[in-house]
Length: 297
Figure 1: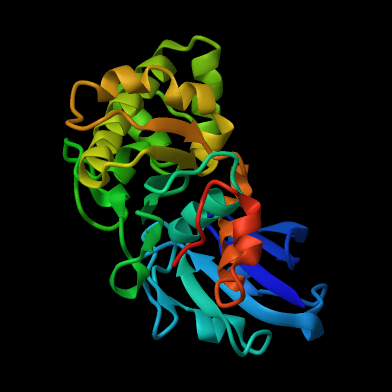
Figure 2: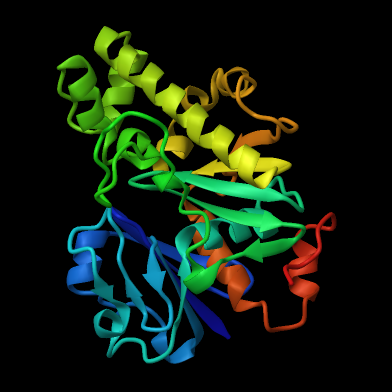
């Protein structure tokens, strides 16, 4: 029995196959995958289940997604994936991310939030050992919390967390703030580490906006654990978390959660999809992953 797990991100798509582990994992550019999602090299005849993770918002019944950080903004997954896949299940990528870290990660808690800071910003939430998905699976679109200011977000709103701190928007935000151009977020962080004053100013403001967004998440969901995933957080863990708790202390009204970066790095979502594939089977497999947790209900 083989499961197919596909994580469609704004810039890259991860394709994994396996049963109790990801026996293979390949990475392709999302624009290429959305143009021609070739699966010729996959063992399609052995695929028992297929799980697809996408950015939200999504309409799971129609299998249509409307991600503000992917050009085109409306993607019909049935049309995209046929004739390669006749049957698949669609899930919000952050919901898969929190399940992946919960089941396979190095740290877990019965009340935890996974926040992705990547091309966009979103969250997956487990409360009392239960995944909270919301209507159509679009719970916790925290990237569209208002954190201040008037900067326009990709969704059309203003002042959203994603408009300032996502990988796609950071370079333009840094330019508006300092007048200095950075090719992408990676270059911005590199210049910061080299001591560039404009990069330092932009990163400091990013930290402040991240603190506002995360404090809102803490106050709303009261998690024991926050896992920070996504390319921006995973590739720059010290930079993202340095000084964060002291900034949060000013605004949170409940206990300070533990804050870590994703132990599964950029494969949190894929492992979450793998866990989803097992949910209608006996729970022994999920229980075996962590003796300290119960399987998702």
